[in-house]
Length: 255
Image (cartoon, rainbow, N blue to C red):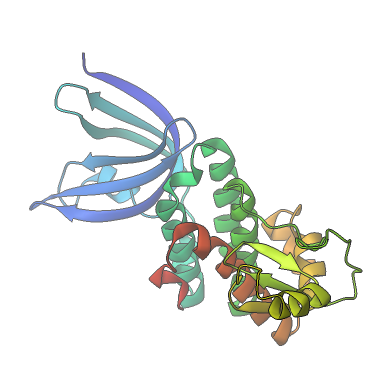
């Protein structure tokens, strides 16, 4: 029989459906990604509530026979109007949403995924351009942990030796692993070893920032700045890790 279920949800994307309806994709703590329909024209209060990056409690009417879901009510707890006030905020929020959708809401870790996404969006509300970049790097690195693909940064995947904090490492997206310089050179000389593909040079400052920032809430990242070179490197690394798992690099990351 049809039933109404209450979820904790974050709206990720909306799209017009027919003349007056709208399809909505949301991340829920209980069932992951759900696609629901919002009925009503532009003046509908419910339609205005179901906008990207709003979050709160939603009431979904589910018809299991037709396998359709309709948004019945939405108690919005976070509106996040600041995301629309700066281009970089809006684009970073879109990139976070597409990353979540592309990875199917975290592959089952839905409550954790929601708890990671919402503070990132909250921090974006007052972020400047550079801080937006830091928030996105932090989100991707922690999202890699949600997906179970965050690579070990303190040990070489080839020799197993712990790497000193002030040493350079090399990351290979082909095997999602770090190697020390000696093992990278040894692997290049060893014709019997499977080619791990091109490696990304990762300086110690980048690794230190990721290790320090990983346990922090996004708003706390204001205390941990990066120079421009480290920011570019951390951005390339975090994107390489998640893109390898997705099998593609989402277009929304290019902002």
